[in-house]
Image (cartoon, rainbow, N blue to C red; front, side, top):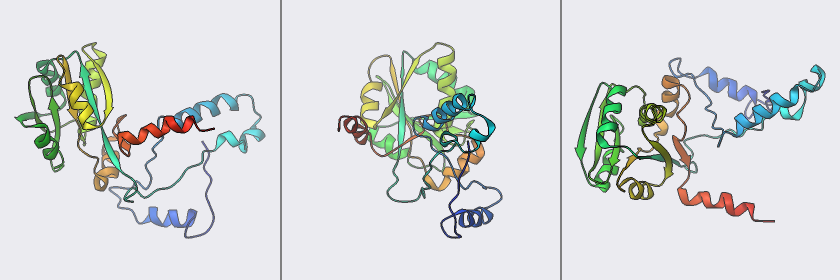
Length: 233
């Protein structure tokens, strides 16, 4: 895909180049692209199809070659990072722990109420996530996890379980809905902590692209407007 830059030293390429030059060599990432439900991947696929019927001259400046992007400061208060939780269907507690053990050096589980569990996982000095099923609720704490954030470690666990045909998964917005589904017999709720903005880029540098469904922009109720707006004529 092509890239177009604005002019000027403050708002254009010069300003961005200056920002990049001042980055820590151990954390050199200036931009992280969020493609919003795979819209960038879709645009790239469309361009790959279109370009086959174009000459080199037509490809050079064809509108479909370029993507319009908006640069945002992730520390802006208007950007809310909400975790997306997981519900596993058709899985036992024992089977979950057996797979979890393969993706970290060691884990500990402490029983807690849902309210206590949500508060505990907000401490991100250690890797934690909340767990609930029909019989128990609490918090897992991991040492030597395979990813730098809980979403990454858990996604490896889930991908392995799905690949083996052991269970099914759904990704849920909102802790209340996640717990309600996960505490039904045969299900498991996995609550993820909020995504920390101050370590956001460092986790991408460490692990690469974030696992799918790591976080959402805004609350679950806001998503209704995606559908309602389609009805406006």
